[in-house]
Image 1: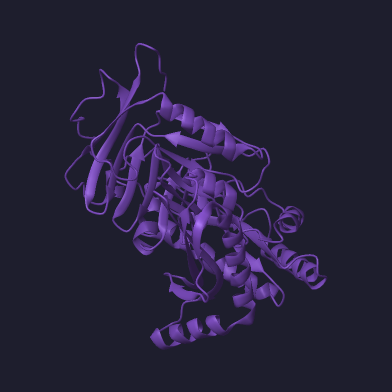
Image 2: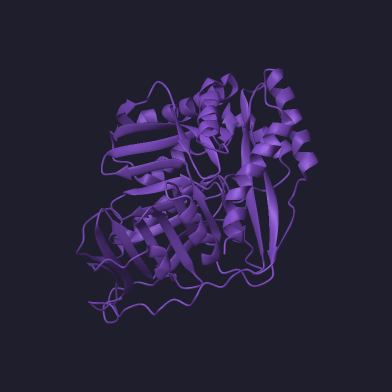
Length: 418
């Protein structure tokens, strides 16, 4: 995207009739999505992007976005969060050399609380009102046969890493560490990203389904949402499988609430978020006890923390302050990160990092990139999926491996959906 004194870029949002299911508007490449239920965004094309890495990646991205917004002519005829210019971001878990991205699409179709709109980006001569209708998307291409193989660490290697982490915790050097593992899938045909995205959204309607620069998933964990001066963060930590019927399911939930190991893990995650979010809020409400949330494949302990902003920080500023939470890193943070680097044996890339969106007003939402897979940009037949488990005192390596396998089913089942 280029701007000059004579030709400025115009961002135009206009109301439209209900477009139907948002993900069904997407083409088969260069897609971006952020949806939950029937609301969210489906976007495509790329007007501009920022690629950034290192410990200052969030600050540099925030500065880039402020400068870009200031260079645009904005014609917003809808005036709700998510209209006007929007950037979609996906950030690495670690401070190392792997790349984080911010992307501004060419076209965004959005829906929020019954209002639907389309946002287009271009110069004043080509950005027409109304815009031409998007072309009909091509049918979703099935992946064909799928072959799975170990990722960076084998199942046995993962259990050994969990054992080592439990020993560190017993030695008093840390309270919790999250260890992740990966699994590689190779498909018979070139992978259509919609073949993964749409089944995830269908199976996990209460999660935030996302696609940003080839990272596709459905996360149950909202790192932060900022709407005006209202802030919310959803903490999930502590996991049990779904039951075979309603009675068994209820018993699993009761056992989860009664589990000392899971309650400790959850409390550490809640404390991590409340301590990071508190300095930005004039009011902060932290429920005293978690509730159980049921997803298609697992149940989690959940706590929603809410607050009111004191100084107007943006959604991206808040995501930077909150990352990484104890739910995906551990406690204390510095020691947990060092143990992850020592024991995990892989580069997480953008797994477990913030993923979401920000508009020109600073409103936006960032989830934690969980239950996700990264498409291989060099091989259209390959993707890498991730899952992690919180390790605390009392963790059993075989149980943690089984939990990671259950979490990997979210992406596996979506990939195998027909």
